[in-house]
Length: 244
Image (cartoon, rainbow, N blue to C red):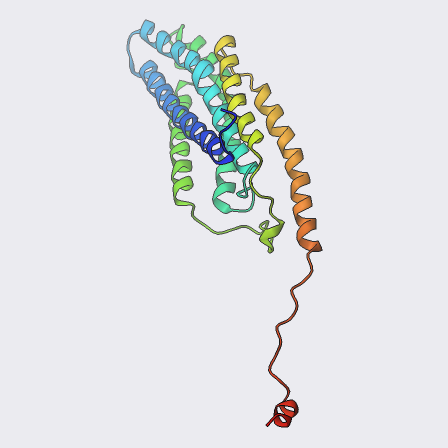
């Protein structure tokens, strides 16, 4: 594995990003089906079971895959010339991902617990907005997939006028750390029953600091390069006449 090139490790990180994103979308759709079943079934036991399964699915699959998808996406942006804010399509994906993570971490988990508690009493609880929200989550991920393929829109005002000021692709160890970090955090989530992306956060934070220094060095190097000499113009008229 150590002999793999930077390109191969980058492709592996990209494959992980695509795989976890598809898994995230699939679990969001499964969550929507389970919550819809709990709303439409006349059997209370089925409703309770479906809501409980949705809660387990969120903690053991959807949330870990969402964290892995976001982490690999952030690392691919930070470790390549794409960046976070230079291209409009990348910026749109970045904002959508942050919103989804916020809703998933601070809203979805507690709302599912309330829905499971309400289902035991025969009430619907917040299952209706949860079912709609999970469907919208899957749709947002599908939209991000289209954006990644189409790459619409132009660059932003944060794109440097001199492209030499943009740092290049990160070294191989960054992509190796990305792949290892995803595997480690998924293993921890499987053991704990809920996500704990500490390793991913450490890797991302470390590289963002190093990347900032690399970008500053690239800008300083581009500024220090001398301007090319002007091209010689046409010979003066007097000199041309003297040579006739």
